[in-house]
Image (tube, rainbow, N blue to C red; front, side):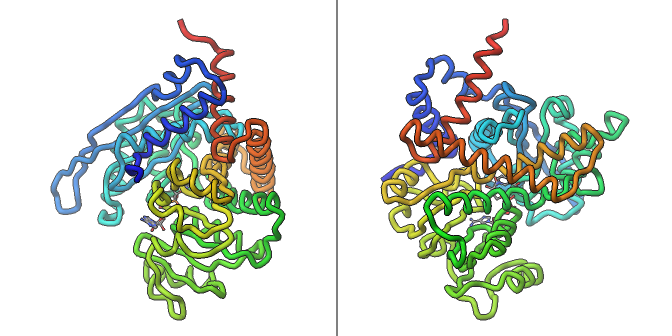
Length: 416
Ligand code: NAD
């Protein structure tokens, strides 16, 4: 039985496979494995009860060969250096797969935002930003939302950064509210990209989207938008879950009712007429498309053989371990890997950054049209790479992303 690898163990394993396929020089592999900079800060804030509590914050800047560092900020108890390093590396590869001019980074604070007040979260965000003031910037490192952070978090970062600079700097973060320079379409961009990949995957497999049964793990920013858009494409959403558990209806859930129930009660469980299931059971449901859109390491060697989906579109980062992907691929499951499937978010973040730099505001149609173009091109590039190297889609995405970084790095050479 595979020891549950850490996310960064998975990165190293993936990189070694890519290195072999691309016949990379060992020194280049060493460079790609090592994040360029790791920043760890102790963030003290005053809690509502007057106590001072110190949180550990991270920002890992992995690679800037193709452009400024780019990556989300996560507030979650599981945040640690290993997770940040893995997510930062995947960001570098992801930006290269969709061919946007960014490097990769990731940040986060180990905390439980569900137990914190709005005031505490605001003080935490502003103090963390102040401590990273010299490390982030529009041409240096541009953060975005991730698990349990949102547009409001980004507005606090932008405001804190701008206060220190003495002028408004919307382009320092993406995923902001529309009122302060956010892009139309950003809030559902990642889910839209997931839905586009599912559609392209179905096309590749020669199946029609109408009536396909979809299961979504994680009903947050990504999962919710993916479910909504796949429903619009004619799919049937048969199960969804959040951290407290899932609900299932083989005839298809009514999404409007599900959303209303989640809004009202803060959870999915307890919806009348739907069967309650655990997150483990949800992953093993028979379905056409499974979308893990919660956290890492959900599909492992322990449950891969029980997964009955025809296609998996990875909305989350690192939801399947390399061992699990191997088992699933052998069983004929078509996997659209995370760095392709969830790249819609960073793509529209890039559009938001361009709009901010030019002080423009594009329409939602314009944003969605450009996103569609980028995602379809990336899907085809990865598919082509998979044929060229005779590898599955996940390996192909890593090969393509890493190759673009290596090609740029070789052109730049090594300073001094
Ligand atoms: P979110 O905080 O909006 O939602 C997370 C969801 O997952 C919530 O519904 C939560 O209840 C659920 N969840 C948490 N733990 C769970 C568990 N153990 N089992 C089942 N569900 C659980 O976060 P998000 O932005 O939707 O991010 C989800 C995933 O997508 C993460 O892996 C993130 O890195 C990735 N991602 C997000 C974006 C983006 O633009 N937000 C972009 C690319 C990738």
